[in-house]
Image (cartoon, rainbow, N blue to C red; front, side, top):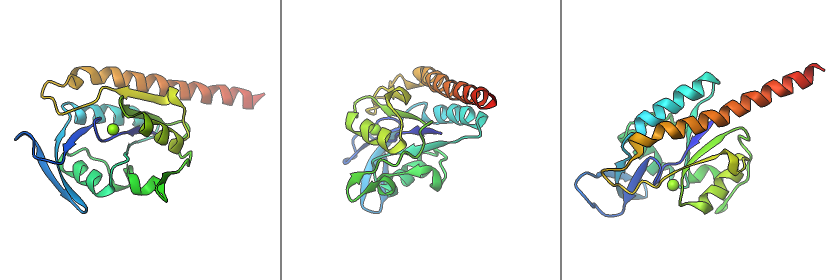
Length: 177
Ligand SMILES: [Mg+2]
């Protein structure tokens, strides 16, 4: 599966209105003013096409609250189903992230300046840093370069997934012996 982070990867949110371009998200437990990253929906579309080839899917993995993640998903039309949204509540038990190893062949896309979150998420998925694809932080800048740069991110994910199928082939060959 392909796992995508929310904050500073797909959206940027503030606790105050900021510029007029921002949308107010109201959810149980809070209120934030948010912007969707330019190109985010096209990026998700390309990732979904890629995942579909392996009968897989794209999921959201965030340390943010579920109510906020679901609201951002609805408002910005990211098209995740509720089951595809894995938020803080699902993977933090007793305040500590759980190392559940839920998807050791997964790929994680996260923003670059969140090293602690990278560790927690990789442990949760059961993957190492070679399966982590980093994108520059989105800070709400109108000229964010993501619309130009996301195809290179998709290509990176594709290369990692190709490695998965090569491993499958190798295991199949070994199994035949
Ligand atoms: Mg983030």
